[in-house]
Length: 495
Image (cartoon, rainbow, N blue to C red; front, side):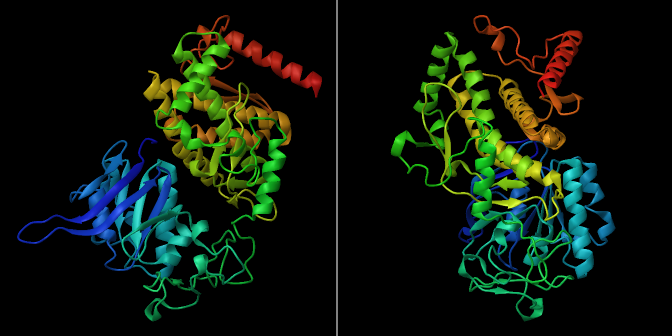
């Protein structure tokens, strides 16, 4: 889990028994993650339990079961009453304490529509600039869809749904409701607009531009606004196939390429939680490398798997401006004796990050998206599994993950030199987030020639005849510069 993140794990929030009153469970079985650098907006009607949840997250009242995990300082809860003027954004006294997370309870409730948007947008930018988790509650779903990086939606019955705004918006033509519900646009809050009603309707107040659209042209109730962020499956499939031409590390078999359980395909989760499949892979790598040290084999296996998991989504993001929404449950792997692990996906979904003129939309959000899908969703449970089988320092594993990312950047730069700057820029942004921060530096001594200098050892030198890897922090600066110059010169001769 990245530094500063907030994790809800099987959380039950409510009020314990006491004073002759029975225990009252308001929210139960909640599971969600709020990442540093993102604004998470908690949405729900009055009485749904937003304040109860925030108070439980801030440890101002005990959880009835489950847990709230924080990495770093405890969160600070700032009630709406403490925000009488929004120019105190977002409560100077809370920021002065240097928290890892700030929880805001209905901070924009007393503001007019324009001020609410400006206030929440400043919160989002503050979260990104200071790498904070900020969770703010509201009963205005339309506001959440316009400004949030992630929406926590309290549904009838006390369930918590964690989605991006793009996932909550309609995916069909303007006016199409998600999940078969009713979408009502242009309905004032006083007449039932705002939040989903008990009947499951998705209602929104009219935005200043005539609907749900924002200033970057996202999907709106207004049919004049075009360019929905949700990408069609055929567009994603084309991008995945194109990037897969780079080689085995980038290849991702599409849905239908092999049914579950056929052809030896197994769920990616088989490699999590210290499974026998992971232990067998470590033994297999050790035998192939000719080493009896499980630590070396586990280190090199983790780096190879990290490269495999980084490559398809990173390549698709840089080359096609698309963000793949790949969860561990979507990915299957097939055992092979050597080479990159074959991967297939059971579904293709994602979003655009460029508009029709190929301008990148908010590249910082692209890095946050990739970090959450690849690192939080895939590499963290894999790292825990590896460390559960073989004693390895976390710094070594996350240095390997960063080195694998840098290798992906180099592969994209070789394939498409015109995208080298974009790839290196996205790589650098990722190296400033959470687990990857401080793992090394991505240098670019010449255009389209990115190199990585890591700050931890991968144990490669302990292989028979291994020596130092190209990223090794122990290579003298003069020798490194000479190696870079030679590589750049040879690349120029072959281009």
